[in-house]
Image 1 (cartoon, rainbow, N blue to C red):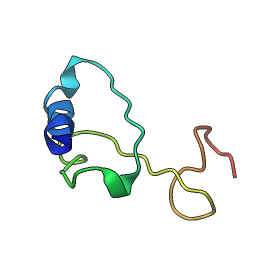
Image 2: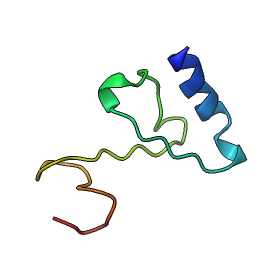
Image 3: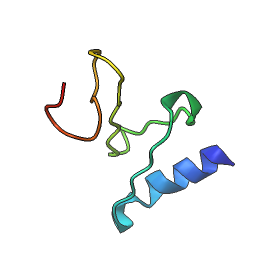
Amino acid sequence: MRTALFQYFINHQDEGQLIVIENLDHIPHLQYEEAGATVTKFVKGREEGSYGFLNDVI
């Protein structure tokens, strides 16, 4: 059911903005970027990704 929900989000992304905050380990393995969706990885430390919601915060 979770896979169908995320696939629905991908199929209907032209209907408006949708922001989903979810652990990447717990979402279905779909082709998000290839479908035109933006995936932002948030991190705790100085690894690759965004540290929080604010830009340029270290």
